[in-house]
Image (cartoon, rainbow, N blue to C red; front, top):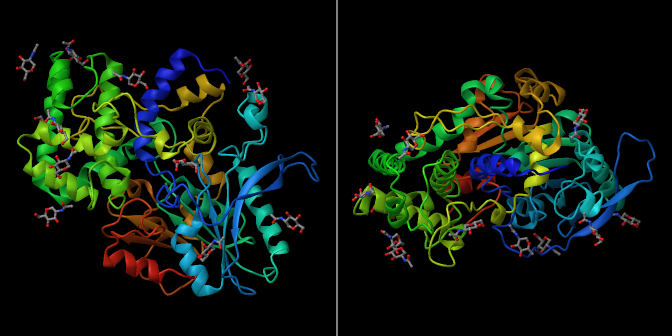
Length: 477
Ligand SMILES: *[C@@H]1O[C@H](CO)[C@@H](O)[C@H](O)[C@H]1NC(C)=O
Ligand SMILES: *[C@@H]1O[C@H](CO)[C@@H](O)[C@H](O)[C@H]1NC(C)=O
Ligand SMILES: *[C@@H]1O[C@H](CO)[C@@H](O)[C@H](O)[C@H]1NC(C)=O
Ligand SMILES: *[C@@H]1O[C@H](CO)[C@@H](O)[C@H](O)[C@H]1NC(C)=O
Ligand SMILES: *[C@@H]1O[C@H](CO)[C@@H](O)[C@H](O)[C@H]1NC(C)=O
Ligand SMILES: *[C@@H]1O[C@H](CO)[C@@H](O)[C@H](O)[C@H]1NC(C)=O
Ligand SMILES: *[C@@H]1O[C@H](CO)[C@@H](O)[C@H](O)[C@H]1NC(C)=O
Ligand SMILES: *[C@@H]1O[C@H](CO)[C@@H](O)[C@H](O)[C@H]1NC(C)=O
Ligand SMILES: *[C@@H]1O[C@H](CO)[C@@H](O)[C@H](O)[C@H]1NC(C)=O
Ligand SMILES: *[C@@H]1O[C@H](CO)[C@@H](O)[C@H](O)[C@H]1NC(C)=O
Ligand SMILES: *[C@@H]1O[C@H](CO)[C@@H](O)[C@H](O)[C@H]1NC(C)=O
Ligand SMILES: *[C@@H]1O[C@H](CO)[C@@H](O)[C@H](O)[C@H]1NC(C)=O
């Protein structure tokens, strides 16, 4: 892999946008708490599952908590996603279910992320990346389940429920579809399944994310939505007239943005990201600065009460990025991506190879009104960074058994989606599963949950409304 300077610029532009999507990369991260009650361990995992009896192995990280396990109880398996830290499933609703069902809670780190590096610090070379395939990721989980069943007394015939959120929500459904004998059921929390491929293939679905994001505000408070639009219009007007100093002063920025296309894109992505995150992570005020209640309503209330739309935007930015402002000023070139734990290099590989999500900020949104429309083609990054092409959405859907037909025929997958989460716009649509009213209890279902953010149903918080408590209580298989 080689990283030229032009690649870095491209990456920044891409990831400023992508960052807003994966702003909570792992709904099962235990609210970003550093400590997990269950210590992690390592076992020897095969590097290349296509080789029968391969002796080449690496240390893969996992957690296993059998405290509540009773003979034959379920294995509640949380697949850790694209993060630098292994998830802590003990802090998710799975722990409650394990208690109730006599189950165990198990987590496996995703290969090539965190400490599960097949070739240590040499893992991201072209030569070594060849083992970074979705086939191997699936086989890791299958192998691990076999080991758990063998090693834990009373687990030989236990049923495995695979759970994951966000990108992990895509994985959990894919695991169930491809290894139904291993994974008895799946819970796909806020998983993305649409808007894949290059601009031509993704088509209008590439715009779903930001269209949905602005609608969250419009539905919650039309007046606040209108004020946010006015603040973006002011930003574009200052950019157009080269008035960086007004931008800097009004928005507490460390430096004045120029009108170059890079600066425009970076600034707009960063501004948009603030609004997206504060809606999507409504239930996680601790992720923000000077917020105690639900974050979406905090933004809306501030927006309505501020002296002017631009003053309201300044408040919002301080909430969104204040934790990253040691000098008291906000640096619009710094996204909170890495602080939220996404590991960009391996995740870019994932984007190129089997998760080709395409996001485009439409010029018809309040956020993108002054942008030059540019087709979003993440494949450029794949070529520059890894000398590889990007997979198409059609290939992913058919190869991993998640076409509309596959999903219509699928059993025992719960797809859960939240009202304040733009991921809902690219998640599983009800239409793929057919009629809402059915009598077949084995058939997969989509569950829409009012008033929740990204993955809030897997990770209870103090801010859970009765609708969330009720739905979490209704899931256990
Ligand atoms: C295991 O799960 C139990 C029940 O959720 C929890 O109390 C405990 O802290 C977890 N970790 C360990 C090491 O027991
Ligand atoms: C990887 O780590 C080893 C041992 O710490 C070190 O000698 C080597 O230079 C590192 N390689 C790279 C590419 O960072
Ligand atoms: C499974 O049991 C074997 C033998 O006791 C042990 O060496 C190994 O570490 C265990 N593996 C896991 C993943 O717990
Ligand atoms: C947003 O503001 C722009 C510029 O003033 C205006 O043209 C557009 O109609 C507004 N959009 C909405 C949805 O209010
Ligand atoms: C700023 O950029 C916009 C869009 O590229 C352009 O329309 C405008 O003329 C530029 N303004 C200045 C002062 O360069
Ligand atoms: C920048 O904008 C401010 C506020 O709208 C205005 O007072 C000032 O004259 C503008 N400066 C330039 C150089 O356009
Ligand atoms: C921006 O908001 C912060 C935090 O509320 C405040 O301290 C600062 O005075 C505001 N700046 C402007 C120009 O309104
Ligand atoms: C903003 O952050 C970038 C990247 O970390 C850094 O290079 C730059 O110096 C910072 N700018 C200011 C004004 O602090
Ligand atoms: C925190 O927010 C409140 C309004 O919600 C505001 O009055 C106060 O100035 C803010 N404090 C800081 C340190 O930004
Ligand atoms: C927003 O304002 C409404 C109406 O004043 C109030 O009921 C609500 O508690 C406020 N929410 C937050 C998070 O500040
Ligand atoms: C990852 O874990 C380390 C050590 O436990 C912690 O300091 C850090 O904040 C964690 N990062 C995230 C993004 O949770
Ligand atoms: C890129 O890959 C192609 C084959 O896919 C190969 O022919 C070419 O040499 C590679 N380029 C570099 C710079 O590695």
